[in-house]
Every structure is written in C-alpha cells, then in structure tokens.
Image 1 (spheres, rainbow, N blue to C red):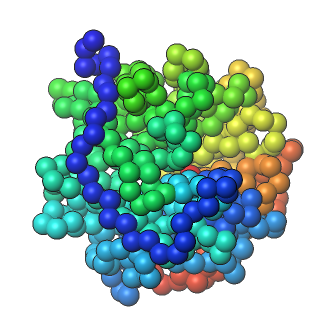
Image 2: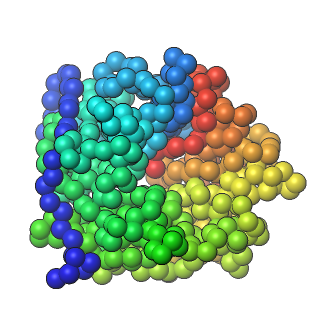
Image 3: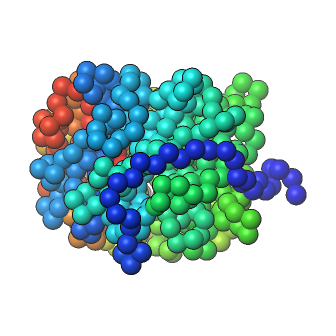
Length: 474
C-alpha cells in the first residue's frame, strides 16, 4: 500500500505538563456537551482575543460567558489569561493566547473543559513553538485546574505554531474525548488522549503530501463516515510549482488507529465547520475554498460536502452569484471567512451560516453581513436564504465601515431550547474593541428579531484591544 493511499499515525515524543488541583473526576458522571462548562445543559461561549492586552502586554486572553434561558449572561463573564491563577506560562507579546479554541468533557465529570491554543508562545529556546492549555470545568464554570501541552525533543522548532488549530472528539474510540492539535511547522497534527488525568497517549499524524504544505492547517472533527467513530478533516493550502491551492484530507478510524481515508477529498483549504445538513445522522463538512487562481474574483467560494459510508463527497459550491443567494459576488467580500453549521429552526437538519465580512452594506465598505442557507433532505438549499447585517431590521447598532461583521460565526444552543443560536463577531467594531451579536434560533427561521449585541463594555474588557468576535468557540 502506498504512502499516499494510507498513512497510519505512530507514537512520537511529546510532553504533557499537568498542573491539577481538586478532586479527580467522577466516573459515574454523564459527560457534558461541548462548551457546557458548568454542566447546566446550556452552551457557554468563549471568545478569543489573541492580540488582547494583559497588564498592557499583547499576549492574548479568552473571555468566557455562560449561557442562560434568555441568552448569554454578561454577569457570569470571566477572563482567562496566562496571568491568571493556575494557568501555565507567562504573558508575553505575541503569544497569541486564545488564537484557537475547542471544547469537550475530557475528564467525563459532567462539566465541559476548554482547550486554548497559543501558537506564538516561546518554548525554551524556540520562538513561536506554540503551546495548548486545557482548563477544566466545574459546577461554577471553568476552574483553576489546568494541563499544558507542548511538543518536545526533535519535533520542537522555531515557528512550529503548535496549537494553531484545535478539534475535540473521541478519536480513539475509547469513549473519552481526545484533542487534535495542529502543528503547521511540523507538517502534521497530533492527537492527545487521556487528558482527563492530565496525560496519556500521544500520536502524530503526518500530512499527506506534506512536502507541498504551504499554510493554514484547519482541523474539524466529526463522524463523517457514519460508523460511530469521529474522523478528522484536515484542510490546508499546498503549493505545487509555485501555485497555491486548497485541499481537504479525511482521516478516519481504522484497526491500526487514525488513518488517511481520502486524499484531497473535497475542495477547501480555508475555514471549515461540520454538522448534519441533510438529516441522515452523518456529519457533513462546509469549507471555504482556496482556489489556485485569485479566490476573491467572485467574492469567495464555499463548498458543502456530504458525509457517507465512503467518506466526503461534494454536494455543491456556493458563491454570492449562485441563484437565490442574496447579494452579488465582488472582490474583497471574503465570502466564507466565517462559517457556522447548526440547526437554528429545529427541523433536525443543520443550517449553514456564511460570513462575508468584506461585504459592502449600502454605501458602507467592509461593514459585513452573513448569509444563512437552510438544510434539507438533499443537503443545503438556497431556497429561503437570507442575508443579515447590522442594517437588518431588529439588529442593534449601525453598519459602519470596517466593522467586519460576520468575520467569525458560531452556532450554539445558549438558551437550552433545542435550537442553535447564531453568534456573529465584528472584530472591527469601534476600532480594536470589537463586538458580538447573538441571534436566537426559531422555528420560523433566523431574523434580526430578538438579537442582542455584546460589546467590550458589556463584558468588562474595554480598552484591551480585545477585537471581540475575532475568535469564537465553534
């Protein structure tokens, strides 16, 4: 069997330094859903500010807000940084703490935990080597119990950017969630198991045709094959003969571990998100397509690929020039820069939100907007598609130049009503402050009605270059 058709991961040297406090997890507790840090059945939200200041130093921080029956509750806001109790490492400029986020109940104690990437952190003599911090949940929310992940030995390097992308799921089929961590400088990603006890098996997954790796390793974990085991879709940009192009490789569970199932399976290379768009109980993948030619000549392209027993298969390509999609594709729209997949209307089919932060709204440049496409039995449909921005009726605020509304999107049930609510970030709102809007899911679909805006003053993080909404927990 050739290397291209099958790559099996193997154990490689890595270090997990754990700093644990408090009692160990209860084996009898039912695992919490991703993002439910206090175990109340509602999704909590984390916002990454990788350039945010801590004590005047731009090392990055994360803002956590708990969900409630009426939506996000600003009174529960907590800021996590490397200056905080129990958090390993030191605040340093360009650590980019909060550049990536992922969540799962790693220790199966009934409270979700949060993994935070800091791909710019220096480790020993290596600059931008990167680290990941896992912060464990509790009845009160995220606690001071943490674990620190770094590479070690020959794999450590300058510009390794460990932690640039994170994805959490049960990748080893042992019933416990694992963490996949990108390391673009190593042309691979790593799978960490046993994080509930602060340590465990670590395996390295080399990229297929990694010699052509150029940039942008994006990891998305879900069961794309319907076999009951989580898989990893790895999207990245390759450069062949000087020409860049995006690709997605699918790694699936096999008898020998996580192995390459599909090489260059579907278009992609950019932002990605997963959910069951057609309601067949198999996860589907939505990706921003990086084209070999200028990807912005039509404003941007998004691919929707359906999962199946044999892997991922392209259903459709969507642009703003696709029939029934609102707007017109124009260079610089950045269509697909933000993506989220979730069931906002409760019909058991996930819907797809596509951000276009460079979209001009009326005469306002780069104000931004998102387009919502609904799921159907055949996959995503453009029927009933809507475009929502700050100029939409019921949406607080005003569309202003450079807001970059919908630069980041997330679908999460923060109210606990069984429907996904949509979060849209505008990191350019009020300069470097940023803001986030929450749109409640409804059986009739998504509108501006009932939407709420949260800014840095609301959350108590003003004046810290938060760029709130730049990174949102998927």
